[in-house]
Length: 375
Image 1: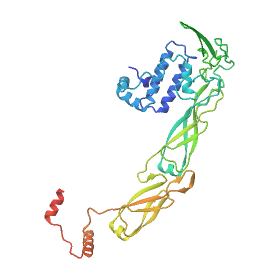
Image 2: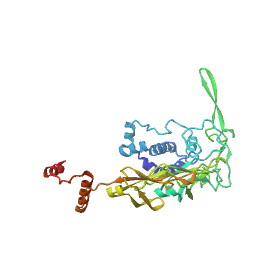
Image 3: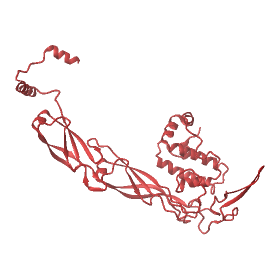
C-alpha cells in the first residue's frame, strides 16, 4: 500500500509547514526540465496525491486511521489533483510555486508576465498577558528566494536561455486536426517551452533550473497590545519570491493565545470571580485581587449579593487602534456559605438567627439528621 508520509519523507506527526516544505523539495526533483525519467510524471502525481491528502485535516484524519481504502469508503476523491492526464507538468508545477496558489493551468495567461509570489502562513503561540500588552517574537521560517547563482533565469551561470526551436520563440504552436467535417486549426501552448518561448539548455545546478531556492529566514515581529486568539499579522514581502520580476508574497502570522486560568476575556473586557464569606457580604470589606496591572484593592459594598459585580474602569484590554484606551475589569462576587462551620461559628449563627427571627434556635431532630444523610 502507498504510504503518503514515506512519499513526502516526513514523520506522521509532521506539521502542515513541514509537509509543504517537503513537497517543495521533492517536486523540484521531478520537474520535467530536470528529471527525464520515464516514471517522473507518475511519481509527481503520487506526490500531489500525498500532499493534497495530508494538507486536508479531514482527509488526513481518515487516512491515518483507515488508510487509502478508508478514504475511498468515506467518499473522498483519491485520484489526486493531477489524475486527469494533465500533460503539461510545468503548468502544474508553477501552480504550486507561482502566485496563484491553485491547481489550474493559468487560462492562457502570459507565462512571461510578472507573477506575484505565494503568501505564507506561520503560527505563533503567545501567553495571555502577551496578547494583552503586546510583545516581540523572533520567528524562523522557510520561503523561496531568487536564486543568486542564475538571478532567477534558471540557466547555469555563463549561459542563458535559448529560443525554443519548436515554436521559434512565440510560445505557441498551431495544430491542424482533420475531421470528417474538414481540417480544424487550433493554437496551443508549446509543449517544449510551456509558452515561454525559451528553453534552458543547461539548468542552474544551484536551483535545478527553477530560478528560486528555499532558504530559512529569521525575523522579529512586533505583536501589538490587544490582539486576540487567531488574530493575523501581515508582514509585507516576506512570502515567496515572485516570478519574472513580480513582487514577493506576504507572510501572515497567525496568533494562538493561551487561555488564562484566572482571567476570562470577552472583547476588550476581562472577567474574574472572587469568593467572599456571608459576613463580608453583610458588612462589606476591602480586599486585594489580582488585576492585569498587578495587585489592587477593591471595596465590597455592604449587602452585596452573589452574582453582583464590581467594575474597575480602564483595567481591561487595550483597543488595538487606540492602545491608550482600555476595556474594564469586571469582578463577579460569589458569596460562599460554609458547609462545615466551626462550633464558634455555629453559636454566632444561632445568635444571629434568634436576633432576626425572635425565637430560639432548635437543634435538628435525630430523624431530620438521618434523613439528611440519605438525601
